[in-house]
Image (cartoon, rainbow, N blue to C red; front, side, top):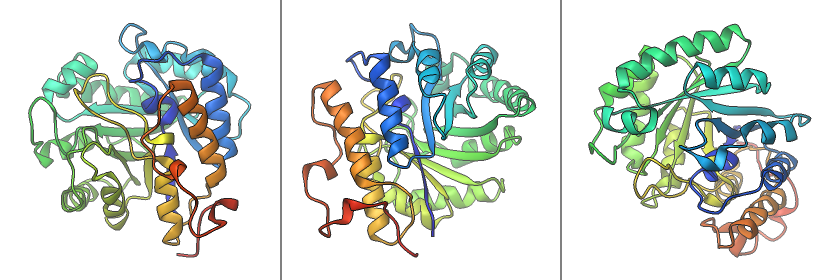
Length: 303
């Protein structure tokens, strides 16, 4: 069985870092991820530079990776962002909504209902431009401002933006647990037939268990970040994503096909670690591959 890993390190991984990462390093980071076998990479976000300064060079980074044979995506929040995405020739746009009004106001400057209406328009415009569209529902299992999230609210958002190619359900603050993952994804599957993707943060050390629960519940794609870096600028104490290399090793060990190369993934993570000047959260780079020689080729089995 194949599980697609969508690499989000260049965007979600770097966006919350205090160290300003040079444009050239970002380009090299994306290139190393592509060389490691990543075929869908979320490279940047079209947001105001004063809101997320780390991503102020979106166009420059995208220009630097335009020759790669990968599906490059970017986050888009409004019409201006969509125009920038089209001009930069991205293959995919990710429309992100969050499940509570308090978080939505901080993240997008609008309550949920208004953000849903805007995303519905953006999805149509993006499709008209020939772009693949993902709808991501953030804070689906918990909000840092309002606490528990009613699953019905997540379902209303999914139903409110039907014209998408993929639905991604995101645990922005790492509040989910395997049982809750399975339950909510089952409910989401009841209101959409779009392919399911999930995005997990490892804030409370449940991210990898949640990833496996998502696969069991029907998710065909999982987000992960090289080195396990990441966080949300608008969610207090939201720590990093599950790490691409750790997730790929575990899935490959269990016979899932990912198409990713461990040496390549570790090479990309090493670049990030040197640039940030600190040890990244991922575990795989701190030990030897197991079994011996496991990192010599692409990960995957026959499951």
